[in-house]
Amino acid sequence: MLGTYTVTDSALRFTPQFPLDAGRPYVVRFEPAHVPGAGPETGTQLVQTITIPVTHVTPSTTVARVYPSGDAVPENLLRMYVEFSGPMGRPSGIPHLKLLGSDGREIEGAFLPLDYEFWDPAHTRFTAFLDPGRVKSGILPNAQMGRALDIGRTVTLVVSREWRDEHGLPLKEDYRRTYQVAAPIETGLNPASWRIEPPAPGSRDALVVSFPAPLDHGLLMRALGVTRGETPLAGDVRVQEAETRWSFVPREPWQAGQHWLLALDILEDVAGNQIGKAFEVDNFDTVDKSSNPQRITIPFLVRAAASN
Image 1 (cartoon, rainbow, N blue to C red):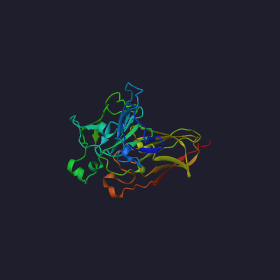
Image 2 (image 1 turned 90 degrees about the horizontal axis):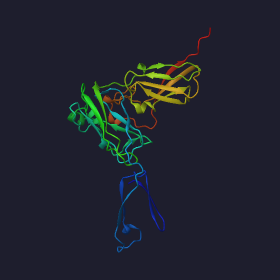
Image 3 (image 1 turned 60 degrees about the vertical axis):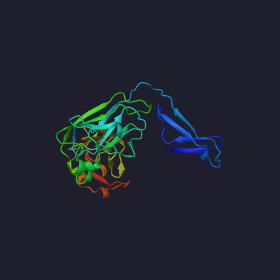
Image 4 (image 1 turned 90 degrees about the vertical axis):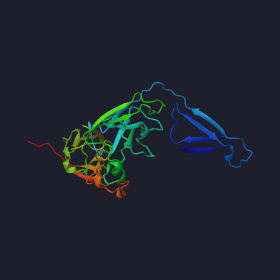
């Protein structure tokens, strides 16, 4: 386990990097011979299993939402988000997820197995990636196995109840969600196709931006913003209508005049296409991993009411 060790004259203390899960057994092993200055005659190793008591005994955590939230996904779907009603424990992840084809059989190798798991800070939202090597044409996994999803058929996401929450308890029940598989989306995002509905000056009405196709929910929450001049506006964001509608409610009333919708170039649709750049034709070796993504600005006008 990851963590840090501290040594005093009378004790060795281990502090785990992540909290221990209640109800899960942990094996503690101490080998005296490894203590600095210990001789070969030092005693044998000590082994003990410890468990933090479970304070909750009835499973209550559920899958609250899954994204994409619409009824259909493209054949080249790249990622999915699973949100839980409460914090989850460790270990977790891909072993508890599977995709079933229209015949009810599991689609082998659909998800990309990763050593690192993608969680939000609250540990309530998990990101699962479909294998991009199967999604993108011209890559060996795609040539050998094809895409995991098939146009015109259904695919069902299953989240196993054996996934443990922070209390070491299983989920309350299995979760299943069925989608219709639609044609792939293989063109870059075009901001010119977005419809912006400006609010009224002096109000705190929502600025609404509509998209012709669903965008990635997680990125919509952090890759769009609003500025007036060089000043970013503080406000609350909502993503609705199966990820085709983004709205922004400012903390302060709108002022009349020029504003800008700011979009970071990391924004993607559900198939991984970015602004002006299609995932299908992108080169994996040249993907921009910069921590300072480029900004695209789209002007809109908050019009003052006409005077009589």
